[in-house]
Length: 261
Image 1 (cartoon, rainbow, N blue to C red):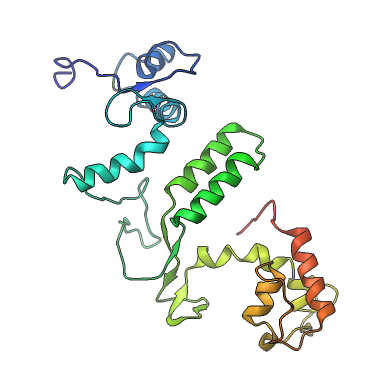
Image 2 (cartoon, rainbow, N blue to C red; image 1 turned 135 degrees about the vertical axis):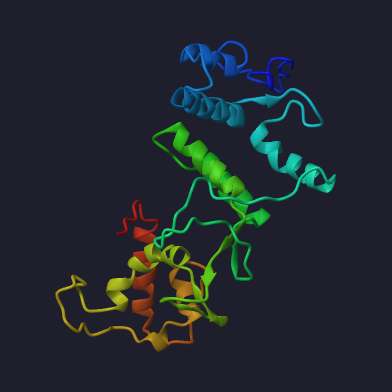
């Protein structure tokens, strides 16, 4: 208590559109009847509510960014602090992570390949799509998506051991499993045309492939997945089959659900 009692609480956030009166922290302490710092379960609920409301619905009351939303100015304040030498970048897991070996995991900055999810043009286009054109059943789900797109930056997509697919441009690395799985949903839309005959049901011991791997050039995938309009000339696949693959992709993608064991 001696750490808190001598100091006055300085309000830094305003909640102009909230139906809750006054500052959020005292409100939730009273609402949940929190009387001690030992009530960790209630405090966790209060913290979640205060952080969520503050991040998405509040506006700054002090500093150079007064009047703006925390979710908009957080990266700007971070860069200001780092530039002034008052902060440094620090990474840690969101919660305790234990490997199968029983060892506790830490964050390591490794030399490897990354997906540039932090690209400004990509981020702005995805944010615009999520905010203006995506329909969600729950507002909190939509806010969570917007938040995730906002903090996504460089995503490690490679590793140098284990089973997996080699990176086409650097075969000393493998595609990291989670990054590899993000392309499955697109491939599923044409897998029945690529792998086997009319049915891919797991019952055929050795299905006869309709498409040779040599025919699956970059130009073929670009055409099928809508990245180019011209039919590719770098393959022996018929135009009818290519157009059918493109129609299948346009009809089924994006998948609504991806389940994995």
